[in-house]
Image (cartoon, rainbow, N blue to C red; front, side):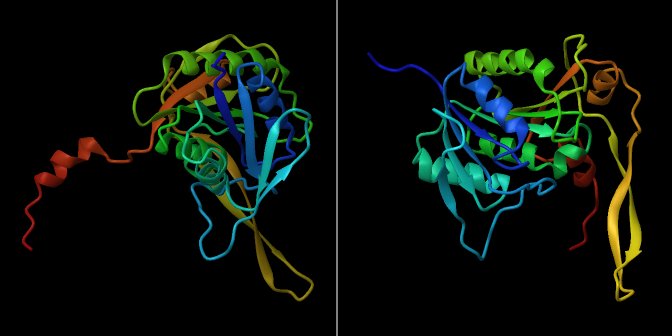
Length: 257
């Protein structure tokens, strides 16, 4: 009898031993055959970086029983590329899930996020893809309230697919009292960054990135609003970054060249 179980690629940016990916892989194991390819060390904030000019390592590891796992020396995007070409050998998985990230990826964070970039790379490869993130940066984060939503959203994607060149950015508030799921747009929200200047023992300055997250968008249809009001935010995103509304404006310019 033919095995009809879906194959699910699990990736992240917090590293192969992060608690969030452990939770995600065990949820996905309820839905199909799981293959994990994740960085061998934390890669947060790497965005869509790829490794060029130095070799990549891909080592099979035995961390959790009955789950096929590989540690990659590269970025989250490298993990997806190597998984597709070297592990699946071009026969693509049915689903790519990334996370569960320690920390939110709402608003403009999606551009910097290694978690979301891994999911974007999955979508570029025409694999239905989802990125999951939780509003808790600690390694002691409690993911238990996320589990049924993660499973339900993944099931829906497996059953229904996603529109072409589209993936899902899913974020969870901290705490157990979730009100449900909201389909949202990305808020106009970003980090107001500061660089704390310090000095090493030789009096040379160095800088430590800090700041506060500012929401400049009070719409009640945004991911930021959903999270503030204890909903799971689900934002469909795309990797076509063309500003289609700007094309008529540029066509109205009188170029002299």
